[in-house]
Image 1 (cartoon, rainbow, N blue to C red):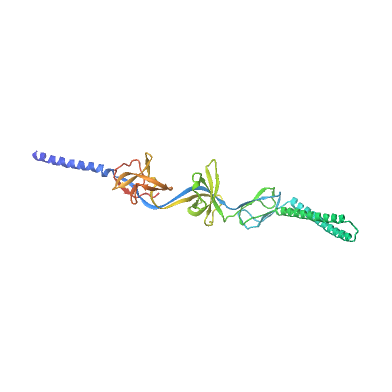
Image 2: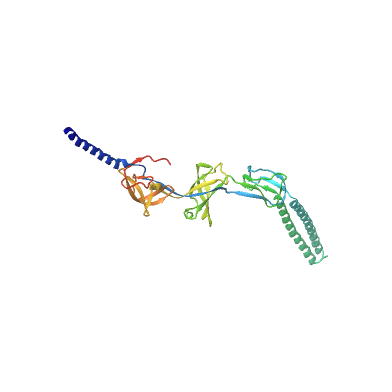
Length: 360
C-alpha cells in the first residue's frame, strides 16, 4: 500500500506533463495552416487594353451589274484568285450596244458635215478674192465651220461615253485578290445594280476591335499590340494601331480601332473572331505582386505577409496594374513572401507552412 502511494504522485505528474505538452502542441503546431505563397519581386509591368473584334480586309470591292442582261461569259468563280483587270464575267445587253451604234452613226454624219463646211468655206474665200461675194457670206461660212467643229467634238464625247457604257457590260477585277462572291453562271439573267462579285485583297488584312470609351484616350497610332484568333488560340501575332475612328457608339459606348499585322499571315479569313491587347505603357523595373493576393478592409489594401512562418496583415499602397499584377509603392520590399490567396479564415499571428503554388 505504501509503495502504491509512492507511485501515484509520480504517475500523476507524468500524466500532467503529457497533457500540458499535448495542449501546447495543439495550440501551436496543431493549428499550422498550409498556404501557397509568392515572393515579391521586381519585373516588367506591361499595361494593355483588352479588346475583341473581327478580321477585315483592307481592300474590298463590291462589283455590281450596271445594266440588265444575260451573262454570256464567266471567267472566274468564287474562291479563285484574280489579277488586276481580269475579266470576271460579261453581260449581253442590247441597249448600250444599240446606243453605241447610234452614236457612231451621228458622229460619222457630223464628220461628213464638217468636211462639207470646210470645203464650202474654202470656196467662199476664193469667190471673195474674185469679188464675187460679200464679206458677210465669208463670215457666215466661217461661222458654220466653227459650229461644225464644236458639234463634232460633242458627238465624239457622246460616242466615247456610249463606248464606255459598253465596257460596263464586262465586270473586271479592280485589283488582285480572291473572289469571295461570284454566284452567277452563263445564261443567268441579272438586273441592273445587282451585286454579282466581290473581290478581297487577302494580302492586307486588318483587325477591327471595339474599345471602351474610357480607354480610348490611352490609345495612339503606332502603339504595339498582340493579337490572337479564336481559330488559332495558341498563336500570337504582333500588330500596330493604324487607325482610330473618332466616333463613339451611343449604345455600346465603344470606339472602333484598326490594327495592322506586322507580317502577312496565311490561313486567316475575313470575319474571323480576334482578341487584342493594345499596349499603352511599359514600366521596366517595378515591384510586383499578384492581384489575387490583395484584399480590402475599410477602403484600404492589405496582403498577408509571411514573417518567420507567421501571418502578418500588411497594409500596402498600390500603383499601376495590369490584368494580373499590381505595382507596390509602399509596405513591401523585394524578397518578402505573401499569401497568394487571402482566405477569410486567415488570422494575424497564425502559424503557416508554405506549400508549392498550384499551376493555374
